[in-house]
Length: 104
Image 1: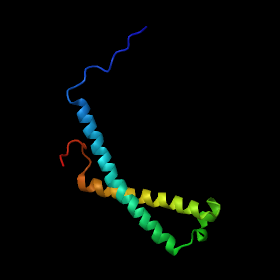
Image 2 (image 1 turned 90 degrees about the horizontal axis):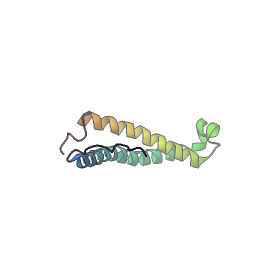
Image 3 (image 1 turned 30 degrees about the horizontal axis):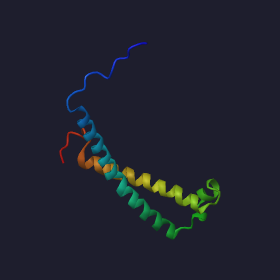
Image 4 (image 1 turned 45 degrees about the vertical axis):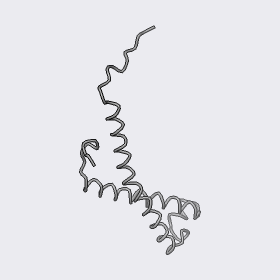
């Protein structure tokens, strides 16, 4: 049997700091993804209320003329687009510093 070294001494408050950091990162992710999700819903509703998915070349060529596939792919495309927009806005407003350094 070989003895494997343990994780070493644990710094006081190390797990609390890690938990606060994870909570802060989760908070940032939700501040970016939630508004992007809501805007993707609105954008898809407006876009497909004006355009029939089967009229788009991409749908007929790659999605086998499926409206549901067009709705799904476009929703995730809109969500990614708005998530990028929200992320840039967040980082321009708050800067790219250590998430645990800020005290809100």
